[in-house]
Image 1: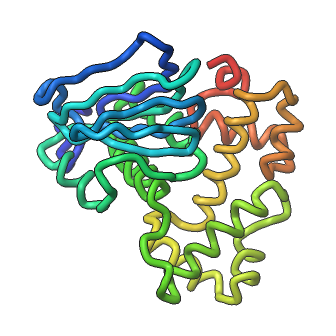
Image 2 (image 1 turned 60 degrees about the horizontal axis):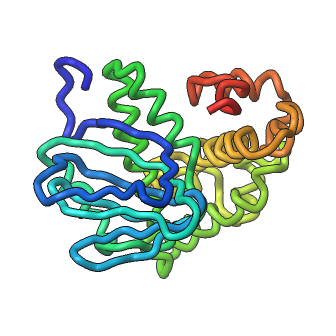
Length: 258
């Protein structure tokens, strides 16, 4: 952690892991003092939590509290997931405050760009990077559960914002002004409501979705950088490359070679 920095929790480690048959993980109670979160990318595995076995597939999310016993193993040929850990006296209580069930649940597509940005912050670990990493933990946990209550007017606006962004991010012309018009609210109202519920402005959320899509295409396809930029909603490939380097700390080539 950054020296002299006082935070309620501290980023610890992160990565992308592929588990194969026979490479089981068995952790005894009291062995790990960090909070852990996992987001399945592909394949199928199993997580044993509190004595109950859960199947884990693409798009599933689960977590472990500090000192919690657990077992992970593969069901099938392989199991790939992204993971991160954080520590601190409040790490466990912070994780429990989201109210997620102590098991495996469906969360949707893994936000690869958030994890990549978290890993990049860990490499530098300046006070600013440490604070940014904490924000990323919050963002990942928010995305895992989505909007907790869409029965209210504000909840419906947030849910619809997420839906519209996911459907339209690939259009370079799509922006927050158009989004607000589609929702029939002012831009300032949209900013206030979305930021209140998601802890990030809608403009930032849209950028993150675009970067996430770009990172996935770089790792999973042989499309050119220009094609990926356009498919992710960036009309200027040069700007896309600069933004990718600034936000994720890596060039398109470096991400592709991960």
